[in-house]
Each structure stands twice: as C-alpha cells, then as structure tokens.
Amino acid sequence: MDLVKHILEGLLALVFLASGGSKLARAKPVVANFARLGVALSLLPVLGAVEVVLAAGLTLGFVAPLVGALAALGVIVFMIGAVSTHLVLKDIGAGPVPAVVLGVLALALTVMNIPHVDHLFR
Image (cartoon, rainbow, N blue to C red):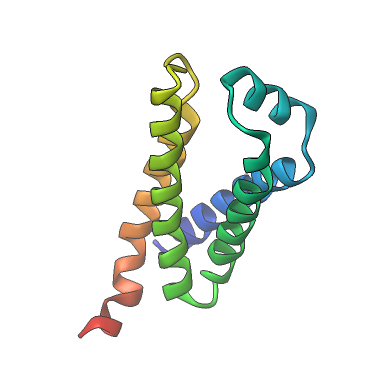
C-alpha cells in the first residue's frame, strides 16, 4: 500500500508542479483558457503559487506523512474550487473533468494516509 501511496503522491505532485509552473510562467494555452472563460489573469500567479506549494507538500509526504496528508486535503479543497468555478462559468463539457479526477485521486491519497497519521490524534 505504501508503494501505491508514494506513486500517487509523486503523480499528483508532478501534475501540480507542472500546472502551477505553467500558470506562473503565463504559458500561452493557460492564458488563452483563462481569457476564454473570462477569468482575471491577475489570478494566475496566486493559483500557480498555491499549486506549487501543494506540489511541495505532496513531495514532503514521502518523509513527513502528516504534511502529505494535509497537502492532499488542500488538493481536495482546491479541486472543489476548480470544479465550482467551471460550473459557475458554465464550462460544463470537459472543463471540470480533470479537476474531478485529481480531486478523487487526492481523496484516495487522503484515505491511504490515515494509517500513517491517525496516531497523532489519539
């Protein structure tokens, strides 16, 4: 189970590092998508920074399970926000699908982290 947990942590960390980095770098496809949806470009650095911090937390989860668990919870909250934003902006097609998938993976990671952190709350 630890191997699956670490693979999932690594996968989510890479996804969030890439996504956050593309927002911080103002990659053309990201800027175009924000413009298409009418989302303020001033949010790019904020959202990008949050994603990079989440990636760092997920990476730290390899050695500090509590940090990884908290980062996984952060991903869930962030993805709820992403799905909500897509729905509010009526980007119903494939728009929210990646956020739903990442949120479900983060939920699975959170559940996998329970045995590693439950002793901290006893």
